[in-house]
Length: 61
Image 1 (cartoon, helix red, strand yellow):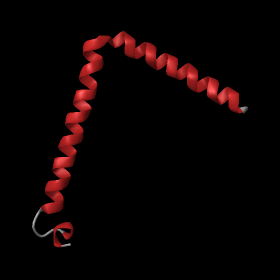
Image 2 (cartoon, rainbow, N blue to C red):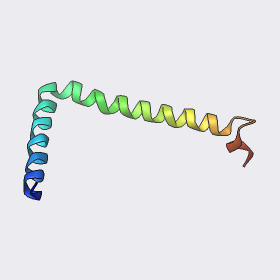
Image 3 (spheres, one colour):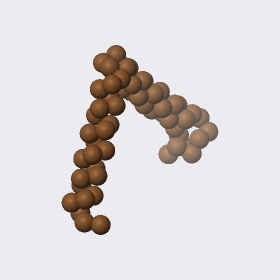
């Protein structure tokens, strides 16, 4: 496979994804990142609680 073909396929897929994102509309497009951000911070909080819990290997260091 020629490298230019690979790049052309990536560009075609990016165009498709942009079209799909545009079809969602601004309200749905904005709600997804906020959900990802909240989920990310929740995972950070859970990780910190697990790491600082008494009796865990991470808390002993």
